Image 1 (tube, rainbow, N blue to C red):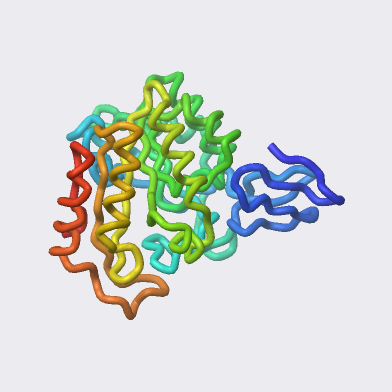
Image 2: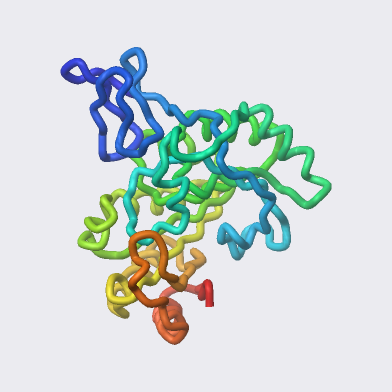
Length: 283
């Protein structure tokens, strides 16, 4: 999924389009130029593995009461100052412990946990799509075993890889981090790209979609912004579940106070003007 440009390999996974010399790692810390291609250096490198309630993803309306085997690696293609998983999302291969797991091994583990209520595999914790090849290979095997594939992503991905992976995804939760380009400038991304990801998954047969916005005081907590976001989501499908989530100080925003619960309740009420299923989180 790459090509050569001026002697460098160009990554095709996300709009950053990192052009990398041989052996050079991209902005995400997870992809590297090797033999004229950009591949996921974090392939099969697992930093986090847990059997979670499906509601923790968060997925409120997809197989409630079940569990899902959650797996993460390292790396991310955004730089959110409020990152809740910075220890792995902002890490490279030498910054965090990891162990090797082949796709078939992970799928076998997921299948072995079905008696404990497991329904499949959730790709989560860091940004899973910077490890696109591993996610795709694992999801294909899981799909063949009738295990559900769950994607928890920032949605900052190009159309090609998105459409390649979408038919394998049974459920997704996409972060809509804000609803202005100025907010995406803060995190190093692009609002239109994330909106495109949400729209594609909303239209994908067999994919259940939910969306989350983390509400950060003074940055994306305007009622007009949430009203516009909810109205746009409703234009795709008014049944899309929308999570309005409370922020707590973390990473590089340690000096900012937690979101007041009253703000979450107010913005959830605003979103309900347009959407049928709105949930307040972390309150």
